[in-house]
Image (cartoon, rainbow, N blue to C red; front, side, top):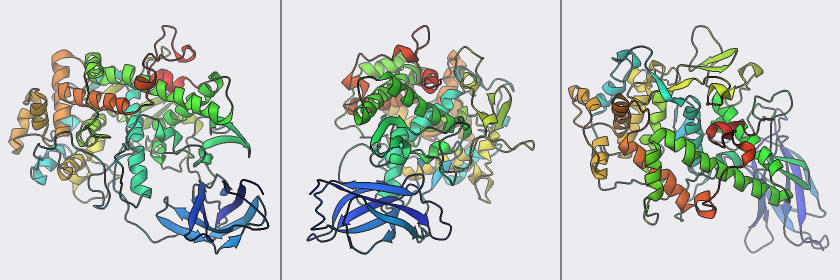
Length: 564
């Protein structure tokens, strides 16, 4: 009698014989008083699976098993076998041809422009978005929809075309373009568990555990045991500790399966050229860390490398990203402040998720220089075919390989700047061709964000400022009185606050209200995680192998640290 046995096989699309990648397969024991789940795994890039069941195995008394395959987590069963006896190990079920065309479900609405970022406030009512308010006692800001449409409509007050500033004054003097995409990566990391639960969890949440963390879940997913297709297994019994990288000849692209789908934990990171290659840079930073961590093998090697990568990432957020976006003195105040994590929201607060983080849309350029020979447009323009946004199954050609010195200060080139954080948004975002709506105002991301904030119950920016003891009236909001708005949506207030600060100090960063809330949120999430570097290793500093000659380390070194 052995202590375990293995089920193997592969899943193929019935009509095309194409491998079905990333499907959840599970085994159940059916001769128990009640069917008992024995284990599960995901199919790999070839549609194959190998499921080891840690239970006694006796060929003389074979276990009676039922095998089930799902799409969308456990939301839809696409195949279920009759019960069968496992008479040897490994037991091969062969090539199972199945149909994966389940009944259509309502698609979860997302805000899309840089790529899918946050679940919209208008998600189906049965889905718990888990955004708790920091200010539950403040009244929601509910102006008429028409006023919000006038505020964010194409050629309205937020259009760059309406700006009183000179044409070349939109570039930030302090923020490189790479921080726009790092913000998006950070948002995806903070919302990974939330989005995953929206797609896969059909049961009520009974725990108070936070769905938001800075643990790089957007990179590692559920881990090598549950998602082996994300990892480099050299053979059935040997785990290299590495994440799966792209093959030779496609070094600028994410690893992909035969259908072109990126083999990464968070498909949102495959939706634009720069973000996809930032994710690729993080894969390679992890693999470089595996080379650096010595004295370990297999799972121990992976766990130690993963911990070090997480700490470097968290350190870069606290010591590089936050100081640039909110100011070093605001970060220091948040670190010194005695943040009560007991009653605080166990995740992203509503005001940060649906309001403050969306400042990033004001930073987006209409065009980006990718390398010495290539540029991409935000949307198709001038007959060019290279655009920032990509379909998830659209590979990235070598001509669009990102030169990171164009996005971060790495001393090789003068990096391009992000746009200023202000109340002006590129006209392309105020009239997106990606949104099919006959009402022009509803094709504006600004309008859509304002309406989502209203539906979510966001308070006004002035109300939040008063609650924090900050200045509640800004010069940049006075013109809105002409629209009949006595107070302003939180997102607009965040942008107006930053714009006013820049005009006063020439510092391009979030103002006192948004800066404090963002810094407090990030530091609180790290304090709530016992494995963060702030708790587990407060004296942590980045490894010298990844720092510059002056010992500096930031987001630029993070994304380039794995380059050979």
